[in-house]
Amino acid sequence: ALTAGIVGLPNVGKSTLFNAITQAGAVSANYPFATIDPNVGIVEVPDARLQKLTALVNPKKTTPTAFEFTDIAGIVEGASKGEGLGNQFLSHIRQVDAICHVVRAFEDDEVTHVSGRVDPISDIETINLELILADLETINKRLDRVEKMARQKDKEALAEKDVLTRLKEALESEQPARALELSKEEEKYRKGLHLLTAKPILYVANVAEDEIGEAENENVKRIREFAKKEDAEVITICAKIESEIAELEGEERAEFLEDLGIAEAGLDQLIKATYNLLGLATYFTAGEEEVRAWTFRKGMTAPQAAGIIHTDFEKGFIKAETVSYEDLIEGGSMAKAKENGKVRLEGKEYIVKDGDVIHFRFNV
Ligand code: GDP
Image (cartoon, rainbow, N blue to C red; front, side, top):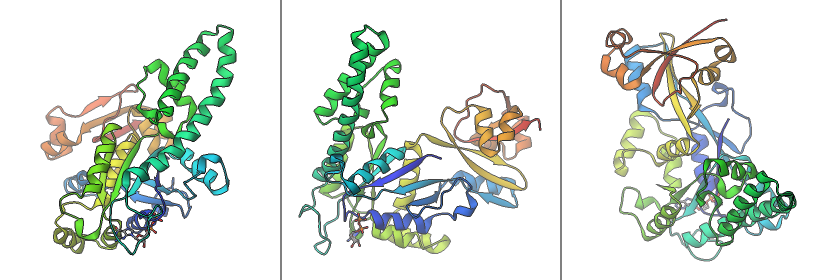
């Protein structure tokens, strides 16, 4: 399963946020993919469509889909020098598929800042620098080998050398590898390197309790400006409040959010944005027994998506009876959607879309 790693300097609110995640989180027993690792928190993906489908189908049970956040431990500064805990930090980042970078945007004299003052951009750059240095090392190693092959006029090696050189130049001017524009052909070389700064990223601005629902402070504005250059998203939260929200449910929760003057918990926004960042999307199954959301990777074909439910569904795949969520809701029932001609029989080549409601037909 794909996972997003939570990173940040010490004392920015990572643990507080991660606690909110595990508080709000689903029990791993419901999700067979889930690892039983204290550094991994499972979150259910908030999705209003699931409630609407439940109201329409009236099933015995409704099951949301879920994915994982990993709390990345270890020491940041000097990590690329490869000593002990710093090394661990890098190897943990290597294992995640996207990065949620928590940045301190709250002022609080009681909470020490590692560098003595709150400066979000300098914080971001401190971590990014370690990742850039680690990537440079990866690239230089690869470049050594590829240069030897390129000397023999190996075409592939020449093409790769060109990409490596451009990546190196970008990193040396402190640009992340993800920022370099590459053709589809060239992209495979970047992918093969598993660079840390090529992983998709979003920034989490951790603001003070009394700033929730208020105008953004200067720190958040600066983070936004920085993120814009990377095309990265910024989610504003107050980690402390999120852990309080996470303890509430239903009515109580709604009232609390209303008091705060916000429509949606910051954590829910973060979950959705991260899900998207990981390239994940949701399809539904809607039967009388169960209405359920399933996570798939964008670009998956119908048999691959079926395989997420059960490998037999993939092996024996015949057709996917598919209707979009909107068409189903508009029709008001599956029968009506069929009458309207909105239910399609899709074959093996069909690329599943977010919001598809699917009934798989398969051979056993
Ligand atoms: P970590 O080292 O990044 O994991 O940071 P922690 O989550 O342990 O938080 C460090 C300190 O900052 C703790 O004392 C937290 O209570 C405090 N803290 C975290 N988030 C907030 C916040 O949103 N507002 C305020 N005022 N304090 C916070």
